Length: 314
Image (cartoon, rainbow, N blue to C red):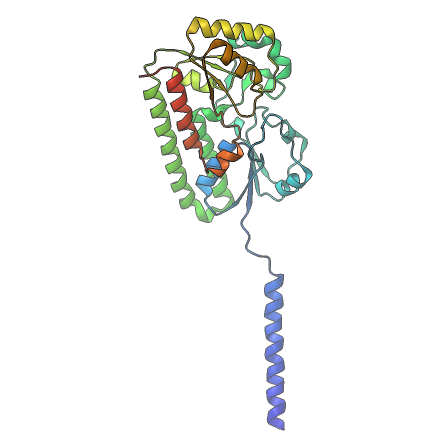
């Protein structure tokens, strides 16, 4: 009987210890990955390539949504509030950011890159549209800086630095991934310089002025139907001007983008008997592009093919 009592006490003690460890493990916070929230697709692409699966990345802009007119839902804002790091494009592209007092570390990437300001002739072409262009800081800054590969390299360096700050144990891994990404950007820059170096045409026509960084870096001209905002409504004067430019410059292709109203641009292409082609300025990508898992590199290669063809390059 005495032995049975001893065994019972041992069993009770063992069960108590087991229950203690189970309860302690249940109450212990799970080792979750930190959340990093980003806005535009280019920043998302950098972060995914550098961070890999070490963080959970929230792409604030849903695929298929125009970044100029996007407004986050309360549910999305609640998710952003859980982020350890928030990275946004800046330069007036996401005006909604200014209305939210984020508690996490927030990076305005436009403060770290070289921004392009509109040339006087660009103002002359679009001065009657500037009141529509509220998304651009003071209506003079071109926010599409991710189309400049040097800016993308700088953004990669900043994001890598912030990831190391967040998870210092992954420093070597992040630096190796960043090195590969920067090498890819350098190869893209070389490809653009080589393929756009000798072309029969020197002008492209676009629905809205998103190609300023590319045209400045690679030596071609851009004529746009509207200003920096794809939501600006073109006037009859704009249409007449574009038709004259098409005829004068011998333009063979007119570019539009997925998130802009394309009815006017399609009519111009039909009346001018020229080709209509989609150019992807990468403020965001479509749901189909996301489903196809297209990267920044993939899309910029496609853009180069289209530009090279439109400019009739050798």
